[in-house]
Image 1 (tube, rainbow, N blue to C red):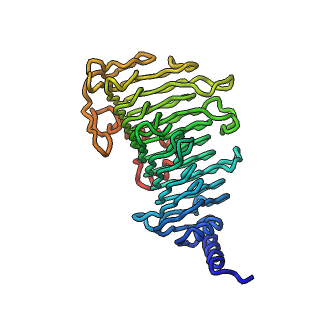
Image 2 (cartoon, rainbow, N blue to C red):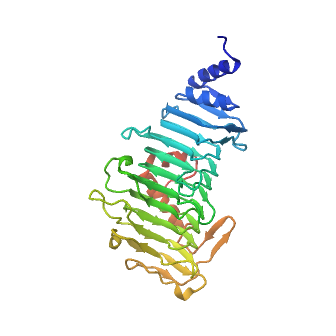
Image 3 (cartoon, one colour):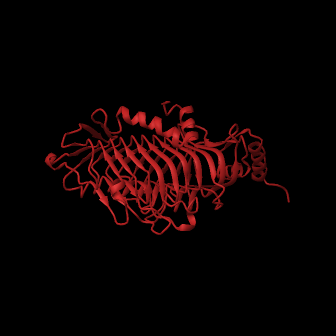
Length: 410
């Protein structure tokens, strides 16, 4: 049989990708061929346009010196991947950069990256930069970005909008040493379960300088509920540990921050505007002798502004938790339409809280900004704490962010 022109083109692309030469692709078949052939040092540049169907890659491994790069050829006109069941699925990958892509319209997940089910061999050293993920899934548990079994990763400058009604913008299961930075999460009011969820044994993840607008029932879910077979590691004793949210802004959501089967998690120097029911929740969804109760959380330096009829209580505490181990310190509380009702109901006494004084926030179509010195997302303390904590919990991701000039040195 004589080879077709398309077949010859794919062979040429495969050879170029494998040799580490930049490969420009302009149609779906060429992109699939380049993904199959990618090796250390491959640079796949996707021309502007629409790419339809399911795209995938497995066992794609770069090196620290020669990462695999998959991205838009023109960042000002990123290519659009219109998904089938998913837009892009990568399994068992390492030292890989995804940048300047639009993923939209898939039935299940937008971007799915996992360890191929080999729980003891995670995917690792990944950068997701400048991705736009929107209009994903249905009313079910469908995610904008799904990460399972990932270590050492940076997510920056991403915008995720309108994911599945029961899913998350970014859903992390068993992910470790990650940094999510300068990203935007936006949904319709009352839609979506979470914006950022870290569960299934996730540990050492920092979420910093992000914007959340009506971003699910729990905008940041530190923990959650995971089937025992999916934990990474297998028996960590917690859903989430050392998940830290610093310098973020929230408008809406039923609860901007939730501690769910978590240990040593922190929400500090964030700005919370008009939460729909609670500022924070302390819950336990995974129970058993191998799991400690949700404990040792910190809620510090945040600004919380709400309306009287919208907030049920400042902190909602569920059964089988250890609220007495939590610390509430130096937060600014203000009920904007009833300042005299600004005193929060908390599970433990708060040290150095400010109650009933207008913090002077500015709220417009871009989000929320401002606030008094020493409090909230725009404070000097937020920047200092992010620069101090990120290198400790996610050193590789922090180095990547600094190389891209998005995180100052402490």
